[in-house]
Image (cartoon, rainbow, N blue to C red; front, side, top):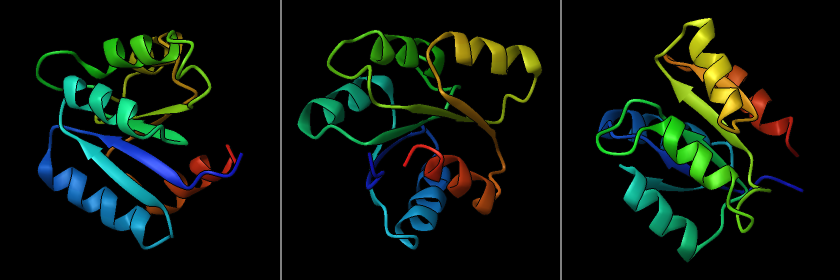
Length: 121
């Protein structure tokens, strides 16, 4: 599967802008969501090829949202990469247990993120 459409979930407008710009410049089609409810709505509108998921958000956090998405048969084939400032090993382990396929710590290193995305191509 070639990754073309990415859903970016983050409650920070600055982070959404920065990552959207970074991904768009590399040819990806990016849709954004600022919380879990909006992310689920976006999923229903147009299924992405990959999801970049922040952890710390109001309401449903990224761990909970990742678990809900990866356990839903309709979306279980969509890889989720956690993209968060939470950099403890326990956070990474917990994220992977929730169904994430990879984990990136902010501030994001562009080449590292792109390499992780391309690993799913």
